[in-house]
Amino acid sequence: MTQFKDQTLLVTGASGHFGRIAVEELLARGASKIVAGTRDPSKLADLAAKGVDVRKLDFDDSATLTSAFAGVDRVLMVSTDAIGRRLAQQTAAIAAAKTAGAKHIVYTSAPAARPNLDAGLGPEHFWTEVAIAQSGLGFTILRDHMYAENNLMDGAHVIASGQLFGLIGDRGTAYVARADAARTAAGALLSADGQSIEDVTGPAAVTNVERAALYAELSGKPVVSIALTPADLKAGMLAAGLPEGVVSMLLAFQIDAVLGYHGVVSDAVERFSGRKPQTLAEVLTANRAALNA
Ligand SMILES: NC(=O)c1ccc[n+]([C@@H]2O[C@H](COP(=O)([O-])OP(=O)(O)OC[C@H]3O[C@@H](n4cnc5c(N)ncnc54)[C@H](OP(=O)(O)O)[C@@H]3O)[C@@H](O)[C@H]2O)c1
Image 1: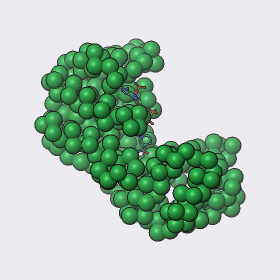
Image 2: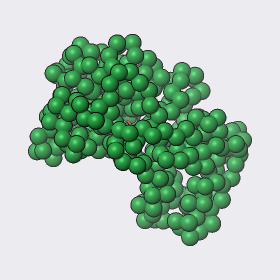
Image 3: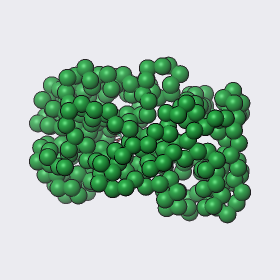
């Protein structure tokens, strides 16, 4: 399954959590010409020592786009964290990849990416997908579902308060471990051909009730799931001091879980990475100390 192993493979954002794992996976799977693009090459000295060609790459800096994409056959474009600006960034990177002669782009998108303005982060991902399709290049759009690790951001607080707030009608979220998603992306860079869109998910949809039970089990403390209307959940998050933009994004995620978009389960992780996806319980158990801190 590694027919592109000897081509020149570029990973953008290679110093991020996701990008670094993807580069390490390419090394582990025997890729011979790996280019790691990052805004700060000094962070990747260890990868350079392993033979990775580390290049400065900043989607906001067109000179680096030209130099970083030179001679590259296939690109893993990791979506940036510059919410609100990343469509322009990523469109520039797609154009640079095409100009450089790259043949295939793998992109980290989001579940049910769509243009609706109330769809949270969906529009930026959707329009990036459109730009990739319009480039005429081969592509593998990886719609990475919610990282299991997202739960570590508020898990300790949920356990301490004993309350997990969500929406009435939640149908569950197929949380995927970030490392599984990154290894899947590396696998797609090594083997995917043609033009396709894949959901990248964990092994099962986990409801808020089940997540609360997991927290209770891992902490030994009672944790209950409290299901609210969208208006009440929004008011609660605002009252807790979360910024308006963050509240809109989190609410959109929760609404998508009610609509069923986050409950989709696929076999993409196993197909591209060769490993079974970790369960949410496994990821949370591995981080039990942080959750109980
Ligand atoms: N599915 C989910 O639940 C979920 C959750 C969080 C994030 N995400 C998305 O997944 C991506 C990777 O996640 P992560 O955990 O690895 O995030 P992270 O560690 O915060 O990394 C942020 C990434 O954005 C890149 N970046 C920022 N500005 C850039 C620019 N101007 N040009 C090129 N690259 C730029 C960084 O690259 P360098 O620093 O190496 O330049 C880095 O790869 C995030 O950026 C975000 O789009 C998904």
